[in-house]
Amino acid sequence: MSNPIISSQLAVGKVTLLSLPGYNLMAWSGTDDSHSLNIATSANLDFSSASTGLTGNSNTALNGPAIAMLPSAAAAYVAWVGSGGSICVTMATPGPLADGSSIPTWSCGGDVWTIANSTPQSAPAVALGTQNGQAVLNVIWQDGGADSMVLAQLRLGYEADSLAFCSLGRSCIGTPSLTGGSGGRYLAWSSGPPVDNQYTLNLANDPRGGVNFDFDNALTRTGYSCENGMTYVPLSSSHGCAVYSNQYGVYSTQIARNQAGDWVVNTATGSNVTIADGMPTATANAGATLQVVKGVSQPAIVVVWPANYGTNPAGSILIDYFQPVIAPIPVVQYVTA
Image 1 (tube, rainbow, N blue to C red):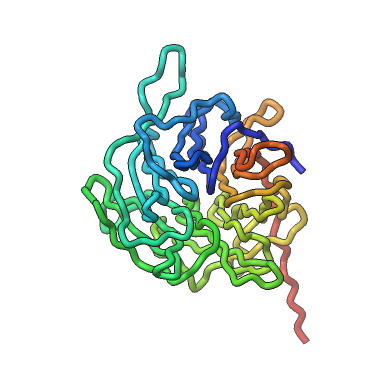
Image 2: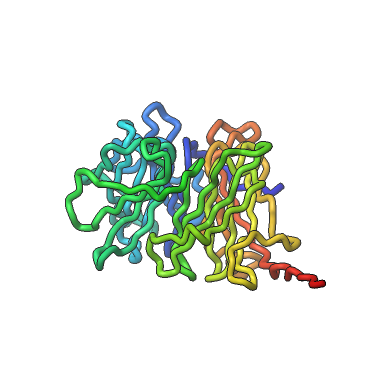
């Protein structure tokens, strides 16, 4: 068992943590009666003394928010499930630096775009992209009406009071994950129905970085207690780490392409780790970053999740990081007669 950083902040649903130049940014839904949307910044991973209010925000955010940061980190799109039960999207921006501070305070309060007729059963996942040469915000969530994950695309710079969406033909439990990096765009999700309380890890890839995922060749691996959902952190074009949680803890397993080019779960020693014990109450979110370990900046995966942990208040946000062990995939030996 690790020793996670225990924040004084309390959350309902998924928590989002981003590493930006010079500081970290965390977004979550509060445990107050309104489940207010919050964004805080910190020079390190300790958000205990961070400012928790989001200036200009009066939005209810059920199930936790998702953030897509513009490449310049000058603005971000924030998506969440609103009090009316629809997916909502707005923009957040950093304000001017206060005297003596090197870290900005983020605010929002502009237009809120609503994806009407949606009946979300999960928090959304978001990622910037292009469609027909136009910059778009891709939004994916599990929708009750469609009985599957669905995709909506908000054209950046255009008015959009209502957005259409289309079914992806795959269902998830918990919150899906959209991540990008070397090897394109990845959609990760957990699915059921459970067999002996075990669920299925799923990973689909679009190597061109879009949202045309190759579901026919997706990873589908049963036998995991991933009922809170999962996320995938790509470390190269051929391997990365899946992070998932259940009521007992947070875990990671390595996913990679084998010699035949298929996505598989790596069974080598050290590829599957327990990040933390405890009682997670939502999907564990994760991302790659650099952490100073013994005075040296080294690649690490930072994980954040809300939990009922020890004697801390329910929904306390926990943060931890680990350095993945990249073990070679065992070679399958074929025996011929």
